[in-house]
Length: 473
Image 1 (spheres, rainbow, N blue to C red):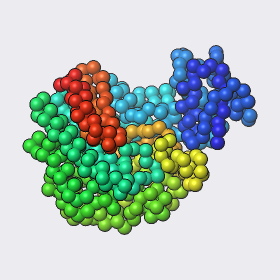
Image 2 (image 1 turned 120 degrees about the vertical axis):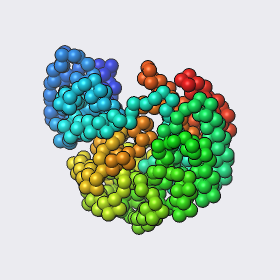
Image 3 (image 1 turned 45 degrees about the vertical axis):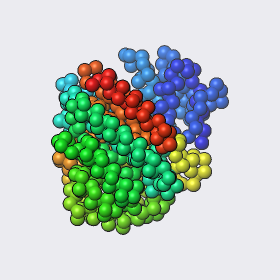
Image 4 (image 1 turned 135 degrees about the vertical axis):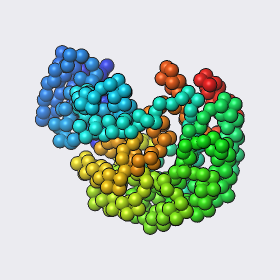
């Protein structure tokens, strides 16, 4: 559907667009000069109207974009009848706001008032930010030489319907795998030498993707061995995570390789515990295989297993989510990451919803119920919220929220979100973030996304990354 807006002052277009995008995420929002569904006039007051409702809002003491966003939000809330508990807040890291306010000595009540007054955020969501910020406090005060290392594997068994990342279906890329690994190994060795030379402390190592376990047993063993020897062995690393991903790529041999090389945390990600949904989103595994691989990992001694689930998946309603909740509860993972579906324009899912209308997404009131059900699940198995982030174009304008048992928090996840520690990222499409703790400034360097180009330009990637690191170290 097309949403048309007539705006008398286009300097406010950005603020107006983002609030309309909360309520009309999958629609084509356009600004036109006449014959519009909505009219927005911003002069001495803020006037909004459609064919049924007209409202006028005063500016607050400060005449700024936040006043405009609040007025547009209140108007659209009345027009649609939908409830968006984050209010006008569209930032990726809401817990950083709470953490900053608490660090300045603000009380919980003052933080609650700040979020309500500025963003129209609900008490529930603000309290969630406060809870996460309190948990993060003990993790974010870092020494200058403390870093994290990320290694990316840009291959997956298949490409999920909602995916927009560098995740190439491995069946059609077998000729590229060895080429990629050769280049990745070169980058790993170069950065390991740099870390030794600068005497940097590696606090955490995260092997993600894509799906690291999509490569074969022998390739996986050699890769884990090299990562261990380069970044973990004799370094007093606090955490070594491997995102195993889908059960159809996990083997007993790979799990044993991870135990051999001191992997402390793994993630087995069903996304849904409904077989029909798994087929729709392009995952070639079953609910039973999730349980089988989870129980095998437990049998082999893994005592810190995360599971990911996604809310708002195509054709899923509250009944399907409650089924997922029941089955995850029986497995009782050590941490649980609840994602809201983010529909990127580069994904097949965006095409299937917006252009072809082949699948449906739950309405807002049902999405709110889904979040409550999964939050209750986490609390029922003794998990506490510890990190949070949000994405653009998330269904329901909700959040991604990580829960864990006390002491099982993923350090890397916290550092990635709070941006208080340098992260050196290796592999195709991996983005390094170099943090200057004195100034708070962050410089980024991204490796190229295409696997062949990454291999062709690996020496250049290494040189540029080291040059950036040299500006701090």
